Image 1 (cartoon, rainbow, N blue to C red):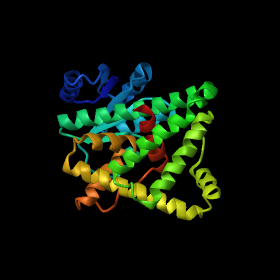
Image 2 (image 1 turned 90 degrees about the vertical axis):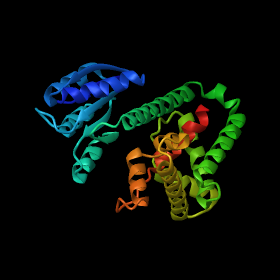
Image 3 (image 1 turned 45 degrees about the horizontal axis):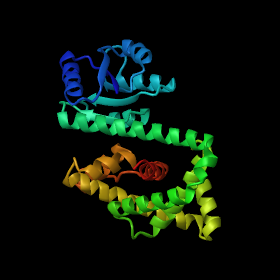
Image 4 (image 1 turned 180 degrees about the vertical axis):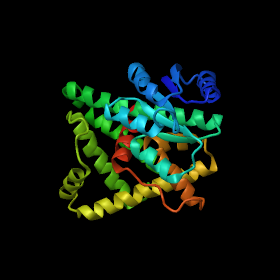
Length: 287
C-alpha cells in the first residue's frame, strides 16, 4: 500500500515511516506537517492510507479529512493523536476515519491497525469485483451455482461455529439473508439493496414476522461481537480475532465492546448488520 504521513512532529513521522518500512507494510510516498498543504498533497498522491495527526497547523486533522472525504477520495484514514478527549475522538470517527491511535506510538498497535485497514480495503475491492464479474458473466457462473452454494454454506456454518452462534435462532435467518445478498450481487445490483427490503422478502418467503426476524438476527450478531471481543481481550493478536474484528465489524465498535466487557466503558459496541452479512459472504467466497 501507498502511505502519506501528516504529522507536524518530524520525529513521529520518522518513527511511523520506519515501522511501515521495517514490517513491509507498504511505501511512504509523501509526508507533511501542515494541515493546509496536506490537503493538496493527499489529493495529488491519492494514497491508499493517510496517517493524520489531529492537531495540525493550518487546519486540524478532522477538518482536513472531512474536506477530502467530501471529494469522495478513496483513501483510508488513520488518526494518530495524543488527545484522549472522548468527544473529539467520537467526532473523528463520525468524520470518517477508520481507526484512532493514541500517542505515544505503539509499534504493535500501528502494525495491527494498518493490517486491518489493508484487509478492509481488500474486502471492499473484492466485493466490488465479485459484483462486477457476476454481472458480466452471470450465465457461465450459474452452471456451478449449486456446488458453489453448498461450499459457501459449509464455510458459513464453520464461521458461525467459530463465532459461537451456530446454535442461535438467528443464525438460520442470517444464512437466508446472506443468500438474498448474494443473489443481488449476482444480479449486478452493486449492493444497492436496503436491509428492510431483505427482511420483507425473507418474511414473505418463510412466513415469519419481520420484527421477529430482525430481533433474532440482531441478537445473534451481538453475541458474535461479544465473543470476538472476548477473544481479543484474551489474545489481541489471535488470528480469528484479527480476521473477524475487521471483516465482520467496525473495529472501533469492537474496541468499544472490549472496553464495556472490561468495565472501562459505559456502552456496548454497535453492530452493522449489512457489513456483517457482506463480510461473511466475502469470507465464504474467498477461501
